[in-house]
Length: 321
Image (cartoon, rainbow, N blue to C red; front, side, top):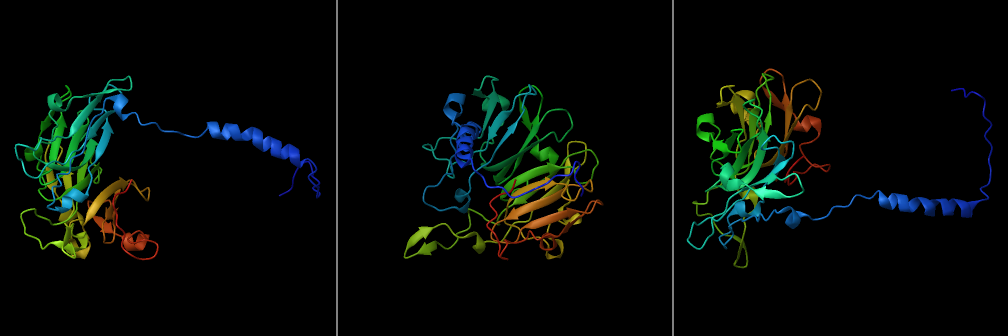
């Protein structure tokens, strides 16, 4: 490449080293001022939520997982509200305080108000795990889908500050152990579908052998349990969903399912206009479901190089963003 006008470059010695050092010292305060800092404003904001896992010495495996939360505009006022998922006590004894999930309305001044009860989104009687938000019925209001150890719950946003539990009529209860979920329009019909990630086949009523050593009881390792199949629900456009997991190729057909999922992200990874799915699995290979654009998916995690860690072993996929 020719430079115009021609430039002559020659070796020179730096004679003003002290000046250069002085310049660096002058710049450093600017760099320090640009540092991003976060301040814990939870108490000042009025958020007093506390997660309860119900652990009382029985070592139920769901106690080892935390719970999710989400920012979303529940009332369409342009300010993001907060929904926090709670788990709860296993035994509903009189001494055990009833726990609920919580919805905090943004007051637009840096504070929030707990509106869980009037909004009717308590997730009562359920052991909460995660939450996904989207306007699944295209009415302009963001709805909530809460994943649980036990039946999941779909809350339809009524647009007036309240929600209605429409799980039964929508057909998306999924009574297993669901850890995460996401909405996506996998078939490009303009209606958001629902993908639910399930973790393990586990029952609190089954007398599992105690785990631990030297007589010390502890939580059993997830490798001792079978993985639970994920589910894809197609939105029928009328408020109901249909389980198309097997037909779409994400429900265990051909040994492609690996289970033990703890997180999912949906994105169009190859820019073909069809959203794909990546599922982070625990103690087994991850799943990368490539959207074929015809209502089916192909699991290509090995080909894409994301099935295992860089050294070829299964990861403890605790989540993905």
